[in-house]
Length: 194
Image (cartoon, rainbow, N blue to C red; front, side):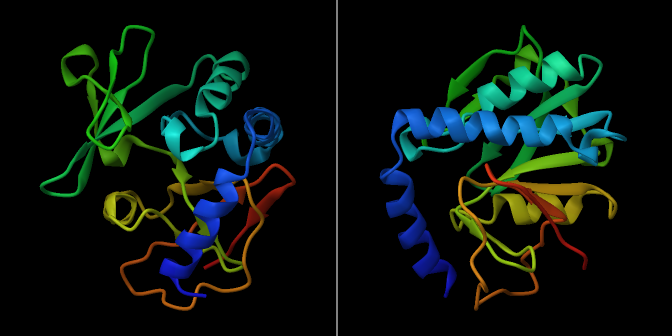
């Protein structure tokens, strides 16, 4: 299937999720992450904050579990620049102020947190609509994450977060698409080699 077809299909699948489904699946994803070896060598973890109207994974639950299990970990969140389609990253602390942008994405207020360089990030939790058996992903189609991932260290962990299991194949992958190293679903963790 193409990215456009998958976006349509998975938007519909998400709309069928109940609030209880989102809570249960988000807790399962958080548990998989916390208990996995993925966190072993991570000092700085990039997370995303959920667009609730799009029924994304409740990352607040995931962040809470990370803080409980790995209190020494530095958490980082991004701010989108719609003109350049680039992300700028900021340390997420208890004093970081968060506001929604024009797309309903919760973002840090730059004046309330220090900026963090791409190269300082060890692992990235990545939002997505769908992913396939080889680790390719479908996002919302704006390219923010592909641009971000292409600027990171080659050994950065690229960890997708998905309510749903993989599709067999995304048919229209290009050289600009950056594949995942792993993806966490409520059922399991998928690992990919490239």
